[in-house]
Length: 111
Image (cartoon, rainbow, N blue to C red; front, side, top):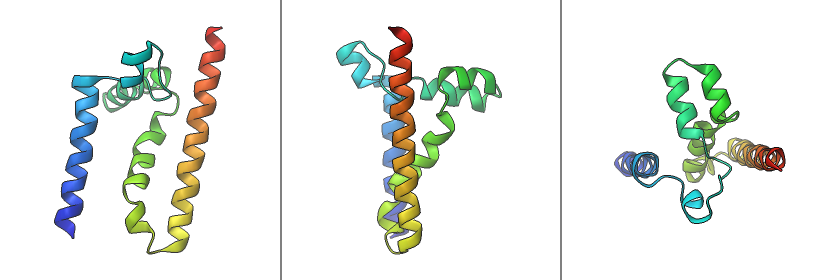
């Protein structure tokens, strides 16, 4: 079981690295418009490089990205504990709402 979880995490990491360094944002490639997550990679690079100000300029909600992805990745495991599962679902829903509100706000700024 642990080996399967570890391999799944490696797959997630490989997909994230592929999008970050090789593919880029698929929505931006197709439409030429930024997606709700555009700027997250740059924000994380800046944050882990010690530049919080730049990280917040790239994407104000970058600090929600990793915990939200971890919650989604572990939903199957969390289902065993009903209260924790419910909290994770609420957290993911609030993150999604925050990303949508930020995206609409950014679009309105451009008009």
